[in-house]
Structure formats: C-alpha cells, structure tokens
Image (cartoon, rainbow over all chains, first blue to last red; front, side):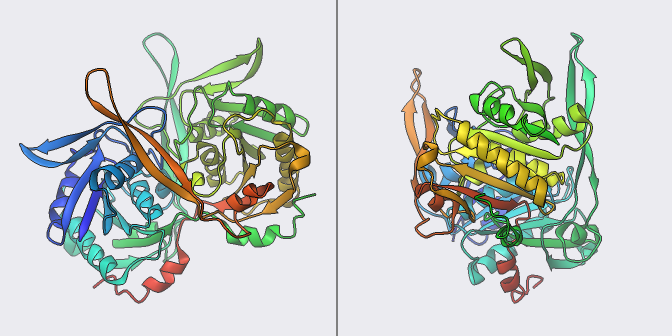
Length: 252
Length: 252
C-alpha cells in the first residue's frame, strides 16, 4: 500500500513524523508537506505565485518533500509530480488542535485530505484536541487502524474520514464513535492594538459557542472522551433547501 | 435591508462596484472587501498575523472598508467590528470566473458567503463565467432579484445560494435553473520552469474534466446558457457513507 502523508503544521512538526513512522508499518510512505505552518488556510491553492519543492532531511536522513505552498498544493504536487500515480491512501496530520465542528471548514489538515478525495483517493485527516500535544502514540495507532479499515472496506468516491482524538492517556479514552459534523462554532472577536507608529491592527480571537449538547456529533464525542470519526464529502449541495426552493419560482 | 457586500477579487474590482451600486436600489449597502485579489484562497482565515482595515475611496468618494486579509476575514471583520450587528444579507461578488462544480471548494467568493451562513446570515455568492467579463449589468440584476427572493422566502440556517451566470448578452440567456453542485473537476498540471539562478519552480495549471453531462448540475446549466442557482451548506457530513460505516466496527 502506497500512502501519501501530509499536514498543515509543516514538514518539521512532530505530528507528521510520528504519523509517518507508524504508517511505515503497513505501507510505503511518501511525505509531501508544507515547508511552513499553514493552519487555518482552508482549501487555499497557490495560483498567483509559483510553487517550489525541495527535499527535506530530518537528522541527516531523507524524510520527504517540502512544498512552499498550502496543504492542498502538497497533495496535488505529491500525486501529480512527485509520485506520478495515485496513492492507495492519503493521511493528513497529526494536527495539533481539534478539527471538529466548524473547524473542519477552516482546517488545512482536512483540506489536504479533501483534495485527495477530490482526486478519488481515499483519505483520512487526523487531529488531536490540544495545541500542545505531548503524546502522539495513540493517535498514530488510531490512524494506522483506520488506514487498514479503509483499505479493507473502501470509501465511496469523494469521501474522507475526519478523525479527532482527545488529548488524553490511552486508558482514559472511552472508545471510538462514528459521528456527524457538529454545530459548535466560533464567536469571533478582533482584539484591537496599536503598532509602534500609532496605527490600529487586529488579532482574530474568539471563544467556542458549544452547540453540541447531544450524542452524535464530533465535538460532543470529544468532550466525552471518545475518539470521533466523521465521514465527510466535498458535495456541499444543500438538498433540503434544494427541495424547498422548487416552490420559489427563481426564474421570475 | 442592510446588505454587507464582499468579494475575492479585491475592493478595487469592477464586479464589486457594479454589485454594490445595484444593491443600493433595495437596501443600505456596506462594502468590506480584501485590499488585494484573494482568488482561490478557499475558506482561509488570518490568525498568525494581524489584520488591518482602512477606509477605501473610489474616485474621491467613500466606497467601503479594505481589509488586509481573506474574504472570510472580511465577513468576520465586517459583522463584528465594522457593523457591530448582523446584516440582513451578505452578497459576495461579482466574481470574474465560474464558481461551479469543484471551484466551489477553492473559491474565496463562495467562502465569504459561507462565512456569513456560518454566522446565520443569509448569503449569496455571485460569479460570471469568464475571467474577462465586460458586462456586469445582467449579473447584478440577477443578484438583486435573488436578494429580494431571499428576503421574501428566507434560507434555512447555514445555507447560502451559489449563483453562476454565463458571460453572454442578456437575450442569449435561456433562463434560471435550480441546480446541485456539479462533478466536473480539474486535471492539475504543474508547469516546470527554471528561475534565472537555475532553480526549478512550478506553476499550477490544468484543464477541466467535464463530468457534468446531464441536466441538473451547475456546470451543465452554464454550458447550456442558463443561470445556475445552487443552495449549499457548510455541513460536510457524508450521510450516505455514515450509513454504510455503521457496519464497520470502527472501535475494533
């Protein structure tokens, strides 16, 4: 099994290292990841400036390819130019920080996996719910197990699995739940400051509005110490609204 | 009706000017848009560097607020800091170039509208299918009509309308169709070049694989000279795969 590994925290992050080491137990691993951190870039792609690629060494040993671009760029570049063929699987991560609920929309980690899904390659995005993860072993193990399950069962074309793991010792985790995307979202706040020249600037901050109060969503699972596995797709059509709009007379 | 207008082509583009002029016929318009072109940035948000905002004048007259950030940043900033209240509607565009089928995923224009939908504000993204649009009148008229229809009928929470308009004279357009997101996607190609110092770099290019051969999708409608209106949502859960995965024993 050929596995393309990427992330959004950058090729020098610990998460991608632990992930790729673990996945080598079950396949041939090719790492293509952003040279620098690309958190919250969503599904951005680089079209207005050229992209560069260089070999990246870790402790003197070849580790993978560093791309001056976004996570989605890495998947395109990895498949089209570096591999020259479709991998059997793409795994993105291990991200520092939850990519549940609304974070799915902003996430570079998820977008790398989604770019693979667009190219009909099964994909998994893996995140741990802390920005200061100290222990990636269990998350890497989960990624490996799901990779094997995807290889065994397949995913429908265009689907990826978005996996989030509580930042807890393995024996505190209650299990693995199949979930849907949660409803929690950010209450954004721009913190105003002044630069040394007296001009205003703003930092985007905010607090999470927890709308996931019932069993079934990714964020609820995480709050209750479960691993969350959500199948997601790139078809954004709102079929419920589609049905309602048939009465709209939109041509009028 | 208070209408927040944004785009991804930048506050100095012609599309946002024509759009805002037309929408002034039906409401109070506030323009908050990126200072520079932000095409293909997807749903990126700016978290690692601060954001700045300045008043923007067009021919000596106040036009709106220019944000050094992404389209999604503009919506957050526009609602939270500039307006300080939810608008009745957000309209994003008029974009140069189709945002149908897979382009929805990469589009900054759509992501601005989607950011509004996340904040429970009804939203419309408007694009014309050419990168060298000469005539925005009809597209602006369509945007105005749909704005009135949204005001009349409402949208379900979290939904936006993604509207694409053929770049044709009004009398060549056959009508307006309610569509779903198409299946056409890009066959990416990285064009390799060498810089003056002998180092390789790549331009992302590609050709569209037209998978929309039957009535019903956005891209098919556009090819057949119809305006396309697609309701889209930010819930990415793949409910079909969700059903299948119940048999997976994912905890095992």
